[in-house]
Image 1 (cartoon, rainbow, N blue to C red):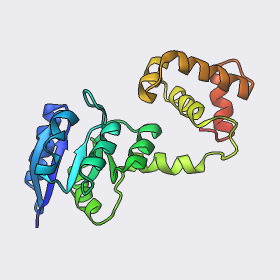
Image 2 (cartoon, one colour):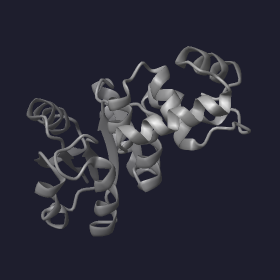
Image 3 (cartoon, helix red, strand yellow):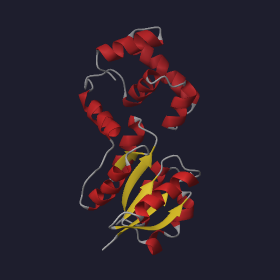
Image 4 (cartoon, rainbow, N blue to C red):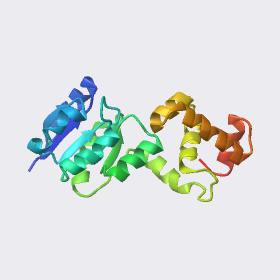
Amino acid sequence: METRVIIIEDDQTIREAFSYLIDRTDGLKMINSYNSFEAAEHYLISDFPDVILLDIELPGINGIEAIQKIKKKYPPAHIMILTVYENETNIFKALSHGASGYLTKNTPSQKITESIKEVLNGGGPLSAGIAKVVIQSFRKNQDSPLTKRETQILEGIAEGKSRTKIASDLFIDKETVKSHIKNIYNKLDVNSKEDALRIARQDKLI
């Protein structure tokens, strides 16, 4: 019996590429593709997919929000995130909301098709970079003085992101980011980004 797959991805080129890949893989059947969750929502039951490939950055309802809605409307579906985002916040939100796997779009084609089959057998496929983020999160100092949100913001700074980008990634406003950064500096007793990052790395806070 073939595994029924649908894709929710707003980039037409990527959508068509994955559709082509799936349709030409033994044991997989491409049922439908959609450019937004809203477009897919009304067809989830009639499509009765086994696996849904879901992007995070979608117009309207984003992929993280869509996971919960899909699980409520069509619980049997296995959701596999397929995205360019490797930040810890998105990874853990997706997995905690019910995603069965998390792959980046540059994952080799064979790994993607194998992962689709793997989730049906209870597996939780992760791209190498994603697995590394998950492992590193468990190695962090458990006695960190920073809150989870402050840690996320400091990680964003370490990755060279602007305050605007950090705010966008974490779904908070820029002023909130500024407030958290002020708290981070106070807790670490520093006055600069460089010193904050030095101490954070030294003490395994990120």
